Amino acid sequence: MSDIPAATPPAFTAQDYAARMSRAARDAAGAGLAGLLVTPGPDLVWLTGYRPTAITERLTLLVLTPDSEPHLLVPALERPDAEAAPGAGAVRMTDWRDGQDPYAAAAGLLRPSGRYGVSDSAWALHLLGLLEALPRTAYQALTTALPMLRAVKDEHEVARLAAAGAAADAAYGEILRVRFAGRRETDVAADLARLLREHGHSQVDFTVVGSGPNGANPHHEAGERVIEDGDTVVLDFGGLKDGYGSDTTRTVHVGEPTAEELKVHDIVREAQQAAFEAVRPGVACQDIDRVAREVITDAGYGEHFIHRTGHGIGVTTHEPPYMVEGELQQLVPGMCFSIEPGIYLPGRFGVRIEDIVTCAESAGRRLNNTPHEMAVVA
Ligand code: ZN
Ligand code: ZN
Ligand code: ZN
Image (tube, protein in one colour):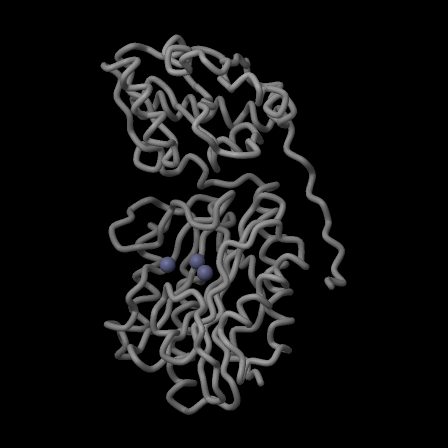
């Protein structure tokens, strides 16, 4: 078990949620929208702290508009749960009962020909219900309409991301002591999941164990392959701790690596370091990708860096902004994102090194701090 006491971060208050909701409504108006429609999922958690026990066919809808107070429409039988959410004091709540038409109830809160931003995760069932009730309304996915809505974290959010990163780092320190050779990837993946939970994660999102040729697929999860002596193994794992995400990758080696494996690993390390050093306010996201890509391309492996360099992280483990060619969004203090260059050699092995980084006032700060050297495991 963990010997690090899990410090509980200060809870977000109704005022915190009220401030997020009013900024979201302002941003919506700035984007030419009549408002935002938020269904259960990460946006609703971030805006109100409300996470329904189950996400179902019964409509729950937060309506944010610039000219009225936040309004949460909930199924009557779930109202007590909604009222217990930490942001409940900052919303006006109404409910609908089984047998009533929830879309008619929602329609009363909307402009008949308004254009609304809607949660990416809203069910088609609900969106089509709204469209039938108000045929002249129009909708845009929140990631398209307001990609930066949750991208800039306040200091308490950064602290939670740092705590999640430290927990993932502790899990990494312990996985180096387990047996790799002779066990299946899924066995090591189960160890990683257990360690993340022991270090305070409430949710494990992924435990990639890419051994040997499987490491050449950046989205390989873990399979039945038995890890062998001489394998390079990509370990990429993360989830949520106290509502905020972790995501880190280290590439380890079973026994002593070859000169070529070390060389490829060194190139990725150099690329990761260069991209990290490029982080500062005002730099475009695509430039973080370009800096990492240039190192790998100059070393002759450009065609094998087949993945973008990074993604944002917050109440989810993958969200905007993306460190990718074409993303002109500039870094802003408080943004938190991964830097995860890699080299993927088909049929042979892969190497990836990933840290979560936050953009501070004048430079980047890593939220993962385990050594970048290729660790040797047994
Ligand atoms: Zn990916
Ligand atoms: Zn990752
Ligand atoms: Zn990642």
